Length: 370
Ligand SMILES: *Cc1c(COP(=O)(O)O)cnc(C)c1O
Image (cartoon, rainbow, N blue to C red):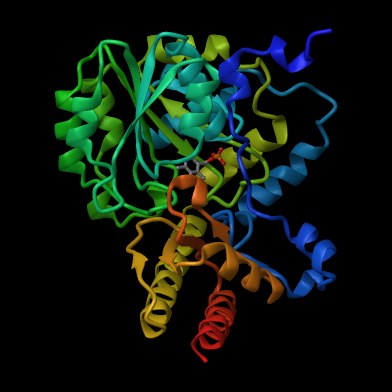
């Protein structure tokens, strides 16, 4: 009899599974630690918890979970439409923005085509590219960031999609609005560009750029945003894409009819209006980023300056330091699969969490010295 795996296409069997951050409960089980004493700074989650307005909306929505969600997401799209000044038919809702990235791949990729993305770029781009049997063209990074000029040159006649993460995860690097605009101008309209702005809310206003306005100029542009980060709703899985109506229509045709659940839709609609929460998320992140950067400098540890809610730093033996941090109840993220085998990524937490991380790291560095 044939091996059942041989029935799957070769390009599916070649996919390396995504490695999520270690859950607190798992570490507690493995090392016999008290869950309450573990801090998780591994998945770029919001340390403030969910937006309080979103929580209230979720509680109200619970009474209706016996009903299917609105498959067209009318309320959430209406709120997004007001917020971003786009038409509802330019919006694609996703089960997290990961879902939207996959929808873009499903619309534009098939075997024989290619997608371009950067070295060290978000792991989901190779995943969804490979799942479609499409070829991934990886462009070497420059100073850990996207080399947009080289990415433009890497586009082949087979290329249908380019993924740009801005800021990128796990490097936290940012392309300035003018650079991005120049890149978009140089790319043929026959190639779709996915601009992944999951961390947009963490940028100061002068670095944001008006990417949504660029949609009018570039019919091949797809912007993706997330409710998982500054809005604090990672567990609910909501994100969205903005594109020109014909592209949004194609993406809507390939998505699951009920891909965003009703509680998530209600929470995201409320969270969008919670400006105060997003402002606090931004401020806590800025203060925490300064705290961790200062701490790392004090320890003599090199890091990549970041525009996200996380920071990648170089420790050499990343696997060893990761394990030693785990033993002290601190979960960070190894990023070897991002071609950064000597780095670890830490998410910015609350002040006391950042302090515990730095103390744990200092202890490890101290041990290594003597
Ligand atoms: C976290 C993250 C996302 C968001 O993923 P969701 O599916 O919305 O939770 C998207 N892109 C990048 C680069 C990220 O780091």
